[in-house]
Length: 319
Image 1 (cartoon, rainbow, N blue to C red):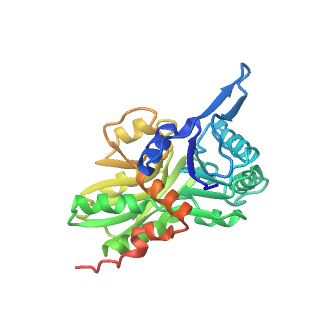
Image 2: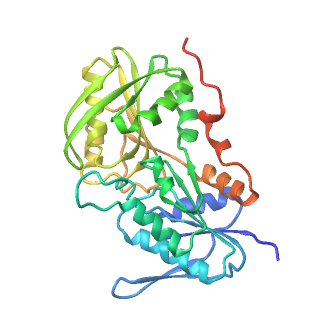
């Protein structure tokens, strides 16, 4: 029996999964999520998956039902004798809980890694983890896709002359440095101090931005507080324009209002999480082709790292 690729989706990522399947050249598999009157749900595969390479597409953004849905889909696929199960998680929720940074707290990302493994996943495919070291929480292979493969061509097409990259916090420095190195451009850092989660107390800019066109890069945009404060501070320090690129549009609380009223020219995000509402300053870039190529490479035993633009092309030298 020849194993084939079958792609299924949970409710959180159906539109993206349909696009991934279409890009791959397949029809999205038929999986019914049955719901009971008390809110309990049960995934049911409506077709045979025995011996197949099964890819389950589901972001685990809030609510936590999305994570539970994925876990049940993995368990159902394992019990249906799938040959190889890959959890395709465009946005890996709970990734901000990656260490014990204060007493008596959970390490949520490690717990989620354990749950995915115990449910029966053979592999995980995700994009731009909040902390890359989360890959080490898994005892199964993790394919960590890089949104720079999508952002870099877009930025190149903008043909910005006075380009400088900025990190909205110290935690994003490595991510921003890689992209800045590719362009042969300078980078600056916005160093922030928090009072509590989602609330910035103070911020300062490390580096010169006078007369520069700034591109902020981050993995998550949640309330957009850090992003909009960074943009305002950069403009105060003499920047000519500020754009932002964030992989995952979590966009909770007053995020849409904050972005609309900010000095940002544009916020460019990926479609790893569906937008809750339209916003004139937000542009969404598709990830389906990148995920479909990664799925094909996984099935055919080919390299995934070949998809990382900044790692496979020589950095440009400063003019």
